[in-house]
Length: 386
Picture (tube, rainbow, N blue to C red):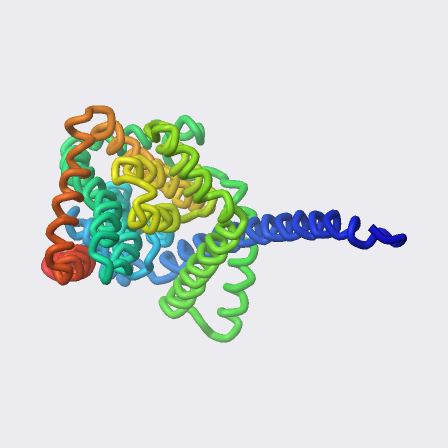
């Protein structure tokens, strides 16, 4: 506008600054993904360093399928992230401590445990009865779908091993190997920091189980921190588009498009909890109906499995990829089982609607439900099945 053109220049500088911020965040996410994979590698090394006696004692209860299921639920609730739980499980399988057969119920448990976040989010509307009723239904439809999927698919898997066999076939096709170890280039890339940390720790006298414990602590800390910052940065990158995308897709009728949107958004933000929790206030305000939020949550179930797939890249054992693919196969099988047939599709919806009516009539019941399903029942199951 003036001779120096300052106002005219400002938008271009702002645009350049905005692009620079996006690029910086994207590069940071890449670095955090590397740190996440280093954490998985450290976790694997820590389990090996603990020694067979300590390993057997730590995971004695996991050989019971129901025990493994409850461990998966409880671990995910405590970590507030199924991504952390599934990455840890993949690391255990990659170390050879945990077999695919024992890991599958834990993966299914993680799927149930991850729904606690949006259920807790719905409790934020407790003081406004009508909002709470809609919010609680939108949250618990995810709970009921995942629980029903486990009720059907866990016994089927235990009886036939169908999910494990499908996943094993896929991992063999992808890796070109039927067993033993494969040379993962990602594993090679992330092993260098682990070796540096090991040399530092052994230099100060840490050996045997102590070294294993320190590796475990360092690995879990890296996994937690990296995933937390990946989620934060990816949410900042796509936050402006998330709600708009969901609304645009659902305004056109949802269905398969809503399933895809839920999966893509969850892959982008690396957290199904963020995707599903965004839906809660939208449902509470009446912007979205329960039937429109439902397919987005199912898509989020599929999208969240990408974390386990990434974690498997930091191991040299094909079983790690197999258990990660079991996670994907389980969620896809649940959708294929319940979603195409209207009568089956409506079961979680009807359960959520009935549950929200009871919770709205007695809001204490919602708190009891949340604590019971996500803490007391799995804790009792873990203790009783040891």
